[in-house]
Amino acid sequence: MPYSVYLKKNEEKRIVAGHPWVFANEVARIEGKDKNGSLATVYDFNERFIGKGYINHLSKILVRIFIRDESVPDYDYYRNAIQKAVDYRKKLGFENSYRVVFGESDNLPALIVDKYSDILCVQFLSLGIDKNKDIIVRALIDIFNPRGIYERSDVAVREKEGLPLTKGKLYGEFDTKVIIEENGLKMIVDVENGQKTGYFLDQKENRFALRRYASGDVLDCFCNVGGFALNAAAAGANNVTALDISQTALDTVVQNAKLNNLSNVNVLQGDVFEVLRQFKRDGKMFDTIVLDPPAFCKSASEVKNAYKGYKDINILGMKLVKDGGFLISSSCSHYMTFPLFQNMLTDAAKESGKKVRIVEIRTQASDHPSMLSTEESLYLKFFVLQVFK
Picture: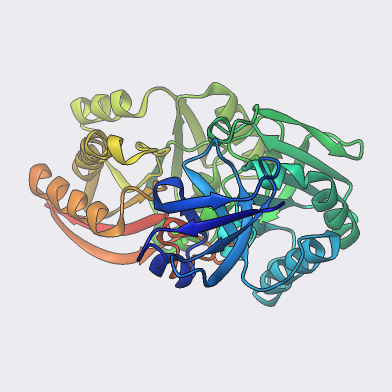
């Protein structure tokens, strides 16, 4: 008998409004018996139908709702849902490389699909979605006829679902390094060993936005494979320094610069905090600095320390920007909310002794849409700041 999940009194408001997650502590009782990862029906305290989603007793997120009617999640359901997601991206002009499915925002919780030219890279981040891997892959083949599909389910969140970390080819024989086109540039993406699914597609539009601020000497911190650095170089900056702690990432920056015939990019290996402090001691200044660090906090308990880390790196950045130059500061942690991130920048400006004004505020690219009902889906902050003495 399938599971029926009944919520505690008044716990349904957020979920009825569209949020897909049912937390275990919101549940009054569970009736029926089925396999973990199976489809469960969720009701409010008065036994009114809310929706259906996959259940996992091992996770704090007990049910991830994605069906609000009597639909059945079979092959046709997934194919239609993925096709709808594709149609949205195509309407916006995405073609070569983009996020095809963005989990909850495409009503397919815990499923990520990224397209890199003719290679798809996928993540199955919950037990229920993992159990449907075969039909999802079949639907992707039917829609895209890709050269290959690679799985990057080597994400720590799977452990909370009782799932092992795994990665590997799911379909086709192909080189796991693929050349994509982004903003008129060619970029090498390593779907096997690159960050996330191979590349940070969510910053695509922000990387292009950087071009209007890229002149003189530009420093791209936490540069990864050089997305911001190459856009700055293509925009005509005199000299671009790509800084990262990973020599492997910097080797790819060099390859990407050669691929685009850009001779105004140089790389520097080192810990960003330490290198920026050395620049300060040496009196080195830049016209534009990009700070795009990895998430400093991945849980609510880490926010306090993360705030300090973001503030420290932004103080350093502000002190190294020439008078009238630009600091571009970003955070990809949804726990560091927009108001909190702006407060941090305000504190950093005070402590740096600089006058700082906001020029532009941006978020993730439009192939990563966020749901008003699901605040976790709006996670990327991108501030363009002008810095004065």
